[in-house]
Length: 396
Image (cartoon, rainbow, N blue to C red; front, side, top):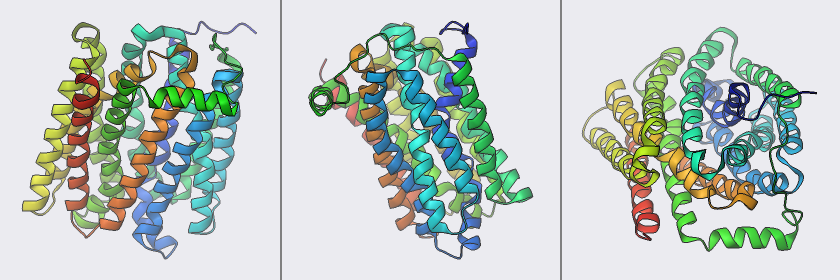
């Protein structure tokens, strides 16, 4: 079978769909979280486990997929992971209890993480170290449509057909992506490492990465900036629906406003990062993100939450996150062509693991105000800037 060139727009579109598995799996059913409390007759922390358990499983699975793709190739591992995601999405839709839903979400996470881990590695394989940041920025811009459209579609589905319809939609989307991978994506890993999955190979790869100070700096910067996003993901539906009083479909529209900020940041980064350099983009992004978080926290601790005092500062912070993420991701995996999968996996593990802890903390601390969420956003934004200045910039 003749497949399209790996740099073709069709393959880029497929990579966007694969990387979108993560945000779609969390953002699309956010409007349903408050209703899950009522449907399953449970409490907020238990429902929050459908997010946090997903993130923990997502993070742990990344440590597996990266080395597997370094040894056996990107294509076969990606096909297996995507198939698991399809089946798990069906299991989520059919879950009769909250416990079964949490378990199905864990399985869904195991499949979902194949998309972003291997998708980023494919970008490194095809475009190389120098152009990866620009390509990742364009992918991030387009991928931002997922969390922008996801809550809107999810809110409409929840109102019209109930919470389970969201997972049926995810099953259909991932099934289409699976067909495209099988038919269109060729193998891109030209540097297969036969020792990548051995204990010695894993220890060598992850040990080298953990000793690389600049790599760790980039990883912590990515992880903290992603926690800015996940603080909002974890707390915004309860704040804006239960406290402010928005309906699920209006919540989806407000969430889209936040994502527009990320799209502005990532698109701008794609246009100017090659001229200004990745380090300068991350520095500017860190300042914007920290400022947005501190402004939100200031509003939260001095007044009752409104749509504007929650969504406005978060959207501003997300412009900075759009600057940070593609450049820090490229900076992390760029120096490691023979273990790009492992470098992407460890970065993803740290990113998702920290996000899971943040999400659980926001749920436990929720007190009927925006204060826990806003404080988390502020702390994460400052941490992203500090990690870059201390471990990456300070190295230079």
